[in-house]
Every structure is written in C-alpha cells, then in structure tokens.
Image 1 (spheres, one colour):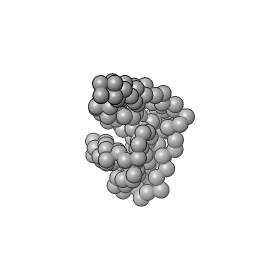
Image 2 (tube, helix red, strand yellow; image 1 turned 120 degrees about the vertical axis):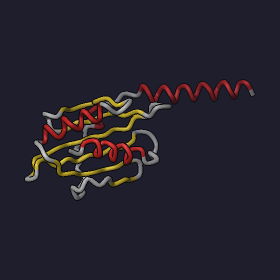
Image 3 (tube, helix red, strand yellow; image 1 turned 90 degrees about the vertical axis):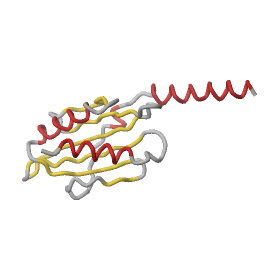
Image 4 (cartoon, one colour; image 1 turned 45 degrees about the horizontal axis):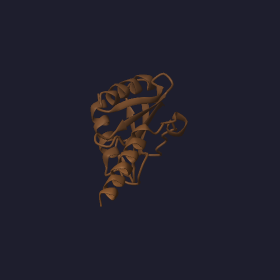
Length: 146
C-alpha cells in the first residue's frame, strides 16, 4: 500500500513538472487567429477554446498595444511571441494550481472603422477548458472597450 502511494505521488509530481516545464515553441502556437466571426465582440466558446472578433477605434498597432497591456495585467500571463508592431501577439496564461498553459493569439488588421481584432484562445493539455478561455476573452474585451 505504501509502495503504491509513493508511486502515485511520484507520477503526480512528474505530470505536474511536465505541465509546468514543457517548452512552448512559438512556431506551434503563434498562429493566425482568423475567426471568420462577425466582428461584434461576442465571444464564441468551443471545446477547449474560444474565439472573438471586434471592430475597435484606433490603428491595428494601437489596438494590439492596448490588448497587450490588458493581457499582461492578467495574473500568470506572459507574452510568448509577437508585438503590436508586427500585428500579432501570443500570450500564455497559466492556471493557478497546476500551471496548465492556455495560449491566446490576437491579430489586428486595418478596417474602415479603425481596426479589426481577431482573437483565439485555446488550451494545450486536455480537451475541456471548463470555459476559462471564453471567460478570459470576455474579461479582456470588456477591459479593452474604450
């Protein structure tokens, strides 16, 4: 019984270490977040992901710079790749307990009304994010609104 418990603890530690220490290759996650969604800022949840598109005032670089500030103010969030000047940014947000990474990519392009912002948030491990990506996008877009 003690041997089984020790093996279970060891496996749990190894899984936790893998989740926290697995490398995040920008080439795998810094994708074009085309949503094909109506740019109405409504978050569209999916299985393990969420997407949104918005039309916002400002240039694409200004909109992405504002979103970058919002994202980096979110706990446990860092920038993985990109910048406002390149037109696309990808962030990693980790869960509090296990450190599961979720990747959010945003791209902005010029539109007659200012800038079109497309965002795609998705999980790395598992199949169900229990709605956290949709909730994060909803929060970010609410804080981004002028």
